[in-house]
Length: 346
Image 1 (cartoon, rainbow, N blue to C red):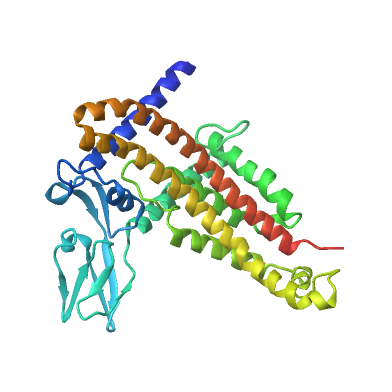
Image 2 (cartoon, helix red, strand yellow):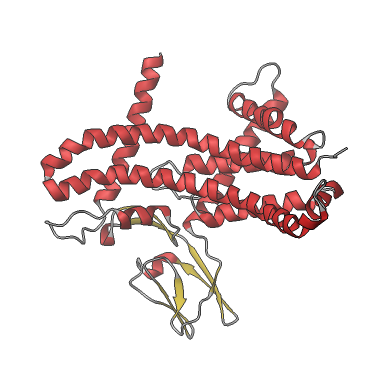
């Protein structure tokens, strides 16, 4: 039974890797036949946000899902689909306003103005998809928990251990007796990061938690929750550190104030860097095949491919672990920060 499951997992990972290699292979070869394949554009295209959801192919053979573009400029709200840009080569006209999109998916107005971009981008669409997945999971688990007796079954048997783990092993020990007040936020934080991490491992998916803007918002919410929930003891330790001589107060107080912001900053960088690094490593290992093909021909590609695929399979397994680990670490540190801000010192 174990061997069968292991074989199924390896086959699934191989299919994921194959689809990723097809995607890399379909990128336009701007280099000549005697020039080494450059993987940087393909990698940066994968980890960056976009106004359309690219699946595979390039140019006229590209398969994409158009997304709504919502722009506010000159007191006007313009709404249209990203397909009107025709992959960046066509300008879109709305009244006296002409919009164009550059190679970095930034929309500019022809007059030089930068419109307020409220578009449903690839990352936003992926987060909405993660929201739907979470609602379906917990709505289904909630109904089964009310109707079932005894041990949990079905989807509840997977969700309940995770919920109990977050509550009993993360939130309770670090937040303290007042943990119930923060439990809904911390559970939402854990499962939001986890689902987006796992969705990001699928071929053609968005790099949500590897986008620094997303991790910035998550860490900023943690900053607000921590400091607005803080008690007098917390602020007293910042503006009047106990046991510090009066002569050192001008040094210690600014350090304590900077520490308020460095904690969520560390959360932001840790999640962003770990998820982005995993995507870049996997795509770099895949790109070795095409670099060998451009430099040594098909023989070099077939020689590198088995080693590259094995390392990619290994990295995919590591990334599954990292998906859970980063959700755990972000929730753990957030619980710790909240606990330090709300604990009563005697």
